[in-house]
Image 1 (cartoon, one colour):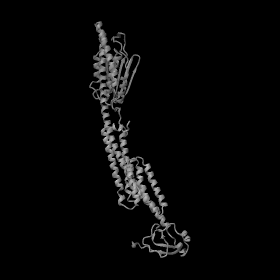
Image 2: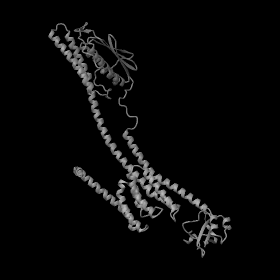
Image 3: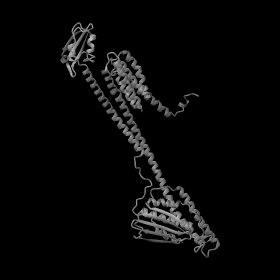
Image 4: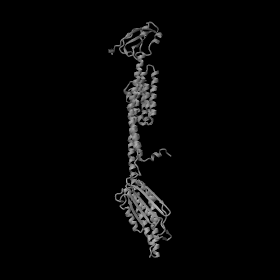
Length: 545
């Protein structure tokens, strides 16, 4: 199969996008090469053969900077070293600056770039110590060029890369926040559905239990024929089955919600007890305590929790112990409300049930109602207890009146992950900007100290002591004079500015300081045919140039 077939199957829009991208990259590489090659025909400070060689090398370095930016940046550095051990040339410095910037912009790892800069400085030091006519001052110039033409643009490129990363992080954060907002909205809808399901369970479950109780009372009522009793039994069983099915279905839909403190109605515990008693259930309400048991001024969370405790306990009693007497007790103190619901286990056996003749209980529940009550009371800051004995079942709840509800979804104590990522990206950008400023400044300061120290050292080592100068004799062999001379001359690379002309018939003249911090006067020693031919003390004429 043709290898180009997968590319042909690409969508037309994607192929067009890739084509435009390649064209843009080619034009950018061409512009970069023109910028780097512009000094080649206009400047003549480097040999012609080196400029001819540099043109194709820079043409290769431009596209290479995308795949191997470190190798591309090495091209102008090597060309600069080939031109001069000082590295600095007006011909290749623009290329070094541009490719160093792209190196920092397009690479993540900084270690290889820093090692390359150190290797470049080491190579420059080796050249300064080995090439004829080169010296440490050439190496100092090379280090300065590396700092300002390579390291500084590289740092600026890294800063631009980190700035772009910060922008990308901001857009990603915005997209993530939008997705999270959608998830919050969806969760809100689900929690509202769960709340509605809980309301259905609370209201319909209780009403179905009362229907079952009334059907049971009709079943054992005197004067009712057998057909009516059978229908009443079927109605009671159907209500009980519907209650159990509702409990199971709603149990699947219920979720933990944070709006448990909201009252879902205006019915109070006394209203609930009265409505239950009107259905034929033997139920009694007792209220007492150190304060008047006024329902209206209870905190909403406490009032709703107390209502739910009584409602669930009465529903369980009418379902699992029909015919038993139920006692609801509310005791309100100065700091808490105590709710107690007590009922017997019922006396129903077969078709008769003691005095009430109630039918047997339809079955034992799953216990999720009590678990829900325990959670609701806990959210209100109280305690819940339910226990059974041989002949009774009791539910107790202690609800503080001044407690604050526990938040089922507490706010995060620390910053979110998105906030941390954005803060880290901003910190990297600030660090990159700081590095781009202080690293060259610190390196320049260190280099200046080193250069000053070296100058001070050479100045001290270029001083010819007065006694040594007096002991030198004209006509003495150069091999005898040289070991007694200082390690350095006043200026080993050039003749001192303002020095008088050398005496005639001399091959070489050397200049030495008379003091460490004194440029004038100087000692001059001249040699001819391997012997000291002339010595004198001269004064530099600074106005000559």
